[in-house]
Amino acid sequence: MTSAEKYCYSGKKELKLDRTATAIKNSPVKEEIKQQLAKNIKKLADLQGMLYAQNRYGVLLVFQAMDAAGKDSMIRHVMSGINPQGCEVTSFKQPSSLELDHDYLWRIHQHVPAKGNIGIFNRSYYEDVLVSRVHPELILNSHLAGITSLDQVNEQFFAKRFEDITYFEKYLARNGILVLKFFLHMSKEEQRLRFLRRIELPSHNWKFSEADIKERKYWDDYQRAYEAAIAKTATKENPWYLIPSDDKWYSRMCVSDIIVERMKQLPLHYPEMPDGKQAELEQALSILKKEK
Image 1 (tube, rainbow, N blue to C red):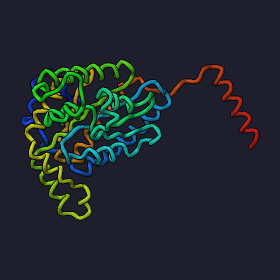
Image 2: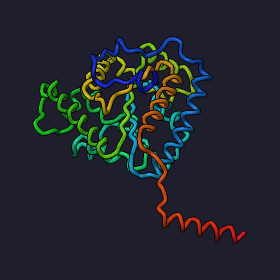
Image 3: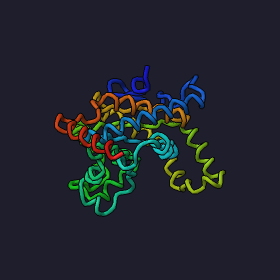
Image 4: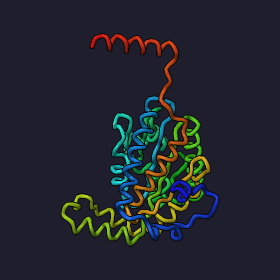
């Protein structure tokens, strides 16, 4: 069974994150994982070359996770072999006043990858059904029409947003954008250990934020928010991939496996030269050889 099959969630069954693995037994040794990752990085570079030259499809990678799950290092390792000219990484933070003056997907659409490109969202539009679900007061600050009290930020409100997101992803797919959504699933204990590492190692102190500890208090609330968001937006066409992420190297291998496998399913190829163009190439070749 491939990683794409093993960790795919398309919404057909009930999702319980507390019953979903954050680590696996009998995983490959680290050296084998690194070798497989290196192979995938090379394959991804080749696929990106065809994607860019063909200029018909785009790829959007969405990474969501709890703090310290390894999104940054995931992007740094898995995408290390691609051409930066054909890739854009966007991290969606707290919306600016300009962004709040528009619909909540407005700022997202600005960074949807162009044809031939790979776009990476380090956090994404899903923050609008995750953080805002745990902290509904954020919705009141968005000046939404008809939303004037916290009791209006209810299940019905988020159900409509799940519907928005599902249609948005379907729209992207219809326009040639391959949407790959990854949830890096980490245990609460592993997060504790990684926070400790950030505090105890001077070289990692810069990664630590007091907000990390404050948000950790809402762990169970976030797990419920993720369960709902993933279950309500997973489809056969745009599934979620729930990646066990207590072991960072294993999670990197799985994500790279899935990206390569899914991109291979696209009808990618280098553009074929028309007959007239081929004759021009042969003539140019002849001229260049004569110069020698």
